[in-house]
Length: 579
Image (cartoon, rainbow, N blue to C red; front, side):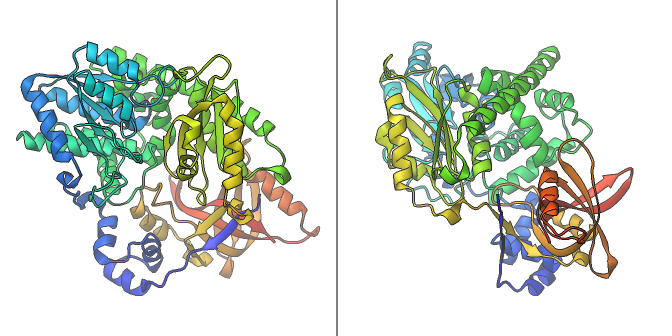
C-alpha cells in the first residue's frame, strides 16, 4: 500500500529557539513540531525530571475522595480496590492497595475476569462484595459508566469512589466522588492521565492529608510510568514527567519492586536499560497476558508478593501466558485477513466476526487488521459472560475496535448505542457487547454514516524535517535522545532524505531485514537498516529499467548503533521510494 509522506511545516524562529535553549536548529524544529514554542514549555520538556506536577486537589471531587478514604482508614472500614485486567488497571490497583495498606487500612482487591465477567463493575461482584461487608469500594480504571452497578452498591450499603480516565457518558454514576479529569466541570489542566497516574497522584495527596511521607513514592512512580506507556496515553506534560522519573527510578534499582524485578530478570533485562520499548513490548505484554488468558490477579500478586519462590513461579507463568497469547493472536490474524474482501471491495468500516477467536485478543487482532487495511476495524466473537438480555436464539457477541486518525470510533459507536448492551472507549479504540442479530445492523449503519473519503484510507508518515546527508550525525542522534521517552503525543522524530545512491545492500536474517550502505553528497556514507522491507525493495528494484543505478528517498529515524564496541549513527528506515 502506498504511503503518503507529509513534511511538517513551522513558522517558528528556529534559530532563536536553538540559541535560547542551547540546542541545534534541528532539535528546535522537533520541539516546535510538538507545540513547544515557549521557553518555559520547551525547557520543561527537555528537563522533565524537574517539572512540577499540577495540584492534585485541582481535580473535581479529589478532596471528597481523599476525605472518604481517610475516614475509612480512621474507622477501620473494609475497603476494596476494584481494578481492571490491563496493565493500567493492575498498576492502579497495586498503587492504591499498597499505600492504603501501609497506612493501616483493612484493604482487599478485586480483579474482574475478562471472559467470565467482562469489563468494569458487574452486579454479581457488587452483591458479593456487599455480602462480605465492604463499606468503601474504590473503582480504578473503571466505573465512569457503571450507573446501574453503583446504584446497586449504594442500595446495598456501600459507598463508591471512582478513579477513572475514560470518557464519561451523558449520565454520571451516583458515586460519593468521581475523579476523572475528562468529566464535565473538571477544570484540571491536564486531561490525559491514565488511571495509574491518577492513583499515584491521589495516593500521594492522601499521605499528605494525614501528615505521612509518600510511602515508597519512587516505586509507585515506576509503576505509574509503566501504565502510561502500556496504556498509550499522551507522553507530554505530567505524563512525560511521570515516565521520566519512573524510568529513572526503575533503572537505578531494577528490584525496586521485587516481583517486577523477577520478571525483568527472566526476560533478560536485568543488565539492560529499561526504556519505553522494553516496557511496551517486553514487560507490559506479560503483565497484560494474565488478564487476557487467565486472571489479572496473577499480575497483582506478582507485584505484591513477598516470597521469592512465589515470584519466580508467577513470573514464569506470566511469560508462558504471553507466549500462548502471541500464538492465539497470530492464528486469529491469519483467519481475519483471509476473510476480508480484496482492496477493490473493501468497505469503509470493517466489522468482522470470528466464532473461534479468544475474545481477549480481539483488540490486538483488530489493530493488526487495521494496520494492514488502514480501515477502522471491529472484531466480534461470542461472549462467554452473556448478559441477562441474551437468549439461546440470540446470543451476545463481544468485540473490540481500533480506528485510524481520521475516524472517531467512540463517537461513531455512540451514535448507534441503542444497538449495544454496553460499550465504551475513546476515539482510537473501543469495546462493546451486542446481540448477534444487531451485528449486521451495526455493520450497515457504520458504513452508511461513514464520512471518510478514499484519501483518509491512505496511511500517512508525518515527516518532521528533511535532512541533508551531512546533517545525519552521531552528535544529532545523541541530542535527540533528550526528547525521549517516545510514544503517543511525542513520537520519535521522523526525517526524510532524498537522492541517496544505493552503494550496497544485504539481508541480515530471515526476518525480511535489510542493511543499506548509502552514499550522499560529497561521497558521505550512511548506514541504514530496514525491518520488514526486503520484499518491497526487490519489487521496486524489479520495476526499474535493467542496469540502472538506483537512488533512494528514505523516511527514517536516527539511532545510535553500538556494535562490537563501536558507536555510530544509523538510519532506521521506515519507508522508501526507489528511483
